[in-house]
Image 1: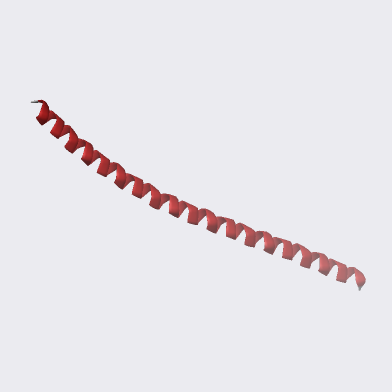
Image 2: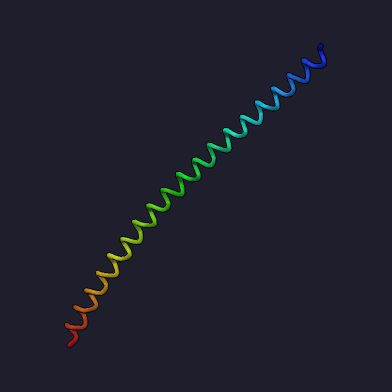
Length: 69
């Protein structure tokens, strides 16, 4: 009887460790996904700023060309 009990205890410990590792992996994946989402939003924002700067440069270039004529 003692042998079966120690086997069961070992199985319980292994299962608990596996469950703990699974939970930690799930949290890590969730954090990585959240970070990727934030990075994507920031990239979109930077793209908008670049487009605004392009428009501003184009306007300035036109003004400078007309001023030089």
